[in-house]
Structures are given as C-alpha cells and as structure tokens.
Length: 111
Image 1 (spheres, rainbow, N blue to C red):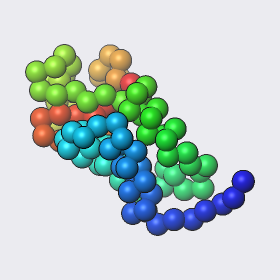
Image 2: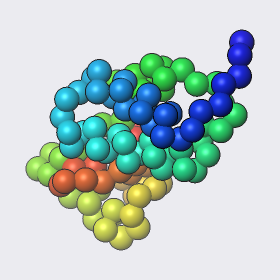
Image 3: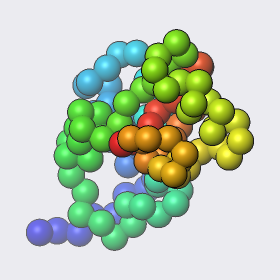
C-alpha cells in the first residue's frame, strides 16, 4: 500500500470523471459535483483509503438518487430543503437520510 496526497481539485476531477461514466446528464453531474465538493471541503476523504470507482459506483447505484419535480416525495423533500437546507432529513422523510445537493428543480438524496 502507498500513501498519496493530492489537491482537492484533482480529487474532485477524479470523482467527476467516474460520475461521467454513469451519466451524461449535466443536471445530475452538477448535483454529484456539489455533493463531492461539500465532502472534500468537509474533510470527508482526509486520510482515507480512496477507491474512486467504489465511492462513485456505490453512491450512483446503491445509495443516492435524483428526485425531480413531479416525482414521488419531491414536494416533501423541497419543503424540508426550504426549511432547513441540505443535510439530515431522516426524521422528517421516510426512507431518505440526507438531502445531499439541490439543483434545477431536483435534489440528490441519500437513502
């Protein structure tokens, strides 16, 4: 095992390159970029073992979804977002733990 240090921008570029593997939807990409920027700025990846594919693939396939206007739970998510912004919503919305990012009439949520 080796230890590598990299700047935040490089890490974000690596994460986003993998997101782009999964989708070419610019709105979805923007949501994931917002989420990963917050994670990086918050130190979530500091000192951690990083597997870019594992992080993004698990988020995209297993842990997160984009909820757009008109979809089930959108109005409920929007109301909580308008009240408290991004973050934990597990007590307010059944089945959703976090509102990770907000964009053009859509939200990235974590289950």
